[in-house]
Length: 578
Image 1 (spheres, rainbow, N blue to C red):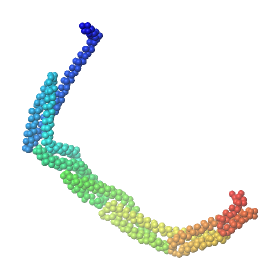
Image 2 (cartoon, helix red, strand yellow):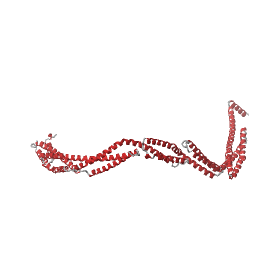
Image 3 (tube, rainbow, N blue to C red):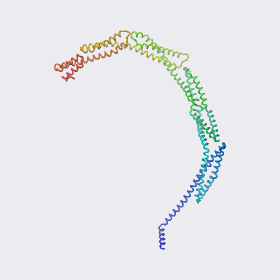
Image 4 (cartoon, rainbow, N blue to C red):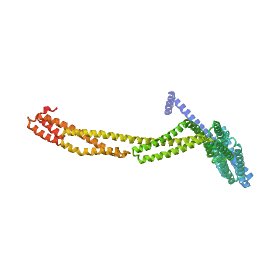
């Protein structure tokens, strides 16, 4: 009793000291946990029910939309192909079985679960959810199998119609492209309409075959349509340009060229050589032929033909410009050219008349005599071209200015050739006179220089030097005598004279330079010896060196004579050498 009282007293003290608050908190926590568990379980059931509803709805839609649509397609096919009636019946049975035996119970079960969830009646709901989940899974498998089987049956139809969708889209794009190029394709509306009508008929045939499940025929038809559309699309790459060139550009260019031709004809330009009218007529015929070709949508070779016609028209424009320029140049140069031909003929005649006189004075080289014959032939050729040109100019049928200019250019080329040959021949004749005068003058000049050199040698009086150059003098005079002898004979052989001159002149000049050099060296040596004589009596060494120097001097070794004399002076009196 005492223990109980103590315990009670302690509890009272604990409560009095605030211990009761702990019990309150613990109670609240327990209540909260119970509420949380209750709410969590409720939400879990609700979530599971929603997931089941979502899964059911998805499979229900597959069944009632996708599968039903495919069964409807098979029903349509069966209406055109009796072979599909048994298949249709099988799928209808499977569909109805899924709808009534599986779909409806699943819908009912989920509806019951949603009602329990709404009324918050969760007792025993877990088992109901599990059984419903099992039924919906079975429903999903059944629907998936039905959907797969239907898709497999319709696979050929899908493939065939899928190809058709792509082909029809290409057809639509071709029509759009045609519409965007309507302006450039004026005149080709009918052939395109015919092709489009044919494609539409083929598409109808395709639909008929596809509806009857004759996919082999349907694929063959749609592939044929695709080939036609592809060919049309490729044709539309170039057809607008080709048609525009053919129907717009070419006619305008023909009109432009024809206007220029007419104007130039009115201005009296001879243009008959261009065969303008015949070629334009041919181009117009080609245009009509190509229009017919394009009306069948055949563009093979059309661009090349158009380019060829444009090239012909461009060549006319180029030819017109050529004729205009040729007229200006021809009229500018015609008078001078005609006058110059007469001058050349007169110049050649004058040269020909003077040639005998030249032959009396000079021997004319055979190669230059041959030039006279060549010039004569060139003169005749020039005259023939001149006659042709004159006949063209004065012809009753006027010739094109380009032809006249060509003839005049040929004439000018011949004139240039003749002028150059005549100038070369004149220069040759002038050179004969120049060479003769040059050699004649060289004989006089060289003779005087040789005599002057001989005089200097005699004044020097060094026999050794005279002996050294004696033979060279003999040869030099012989050259001069030979030249003089040739100059005294007519006609003068300038080639022979030049041959002697070219050999003699360098040798004579070398001889004269050598003598001049030796004379200069002798003067230096003589001056050195004379200077050394001032020291001769005073220094025996100087005397000895001067004896050697004098001996070298008379041996014509003037360099040694100078060195001996200067060395002797340097040795004895270096102060005298600056």
